[in-house]
Image (cartoon, rainbow, N blue to C red; front, side, top):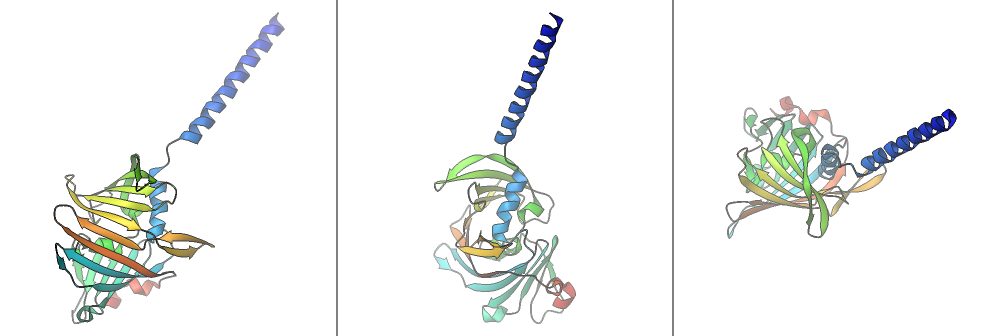
Length: 255
């Protein structure tokens, strides 16, 4: 009789252990995705997490019915630094916007030294300095999952991004990231008080080659002002993954 009880207890323990394992496997399979990993993956389609990248931006702005002057820039970037050099219009040719870590400077031909500026200052239309230079949301924002939603027929994670420091372009961002493609499709930019400032939509017709595979890269970003009828379109072309020399981000070289 004792042997039968022993076998029964052993069988119960084995069944409980099996049930415990099944529950944990099921929990792992259905665990919520990690918001930071989602954000880091989406950054790659905008230049984040790469050894270096170079591209060209064409900016066009509209304020009501008034069309602004077109600008063309060459941008070189890494995760921590970027430099954007104006090519057009001709009177601004050679002007540079340098960002290193959390600091930013502007220089123009004829200036004796670079001018410290804020990423939040507007560069052209609705595009801020930080919109031109930023490639690494994961470095500047803490991310939390804030639900899921269909956007233009595509399933998206919604991320709530909160600035890690005061040198970010925006205090808060609500960010829609495609579940299937791991690219950001829409962003809403907010002030620290929760006021909606701008919205942005992204397209990904470009591709880049890295680590033996081709991945999507942003081709267009349309930024719309929330309270007024104004928008700026940034078109990205000539995208190349390449190592950028450290001298490109040397403030002393800009003087």
